[in-house]
Image (cartoon, rainbow, N blue to C red):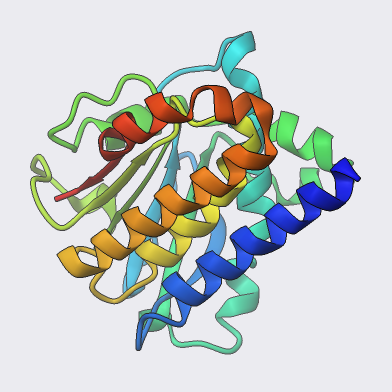
Length: 237
């Protein structure tokens, strides 16, 4: 019975997000994931640039949150080289994951959990720290997802406008997947900085967490605090 109730909650959440955030916008960037290897730089001419950024190595308490975010990255975003077979670069939201070495030859031989462990162990924290330093906010926790309309490697000043930032440092691991869904759809809008789009995004995400709280006891206990803190986790400049 509990499993059926949980399944119903998940279905309701997915439907809510898809219809309100996906079909609610007339045009969009399609997300495609790829790895940003140390010493290499982003390709230009993509419509939008997003990054999975870790400010520091996770401790035991935070490792589940990091793992869930990486899982969402691998499961929910198609590979960039597959997407470019069908779409122009200008219509793609490229989502980079900074790494110390190219993981493609490594990951194929690993089980899914081992892939997550490998990506956590080989993450490029130095590059992530340099990129986080380009934002006016003090970003020392995380993990974060940030989006901007051009590569962060060519940004030579502190960003103060038209970027989207989501802070996962206080998000419960069991609903990180839902936040990834919502963030991808918001950042993929061609005018993701539009205030009306952000209000829709925030309201839908708030409702999503409320629904999840009804089915997940651990989430429900802290939902009041989550609701008060929501604005601090999504920064739109």
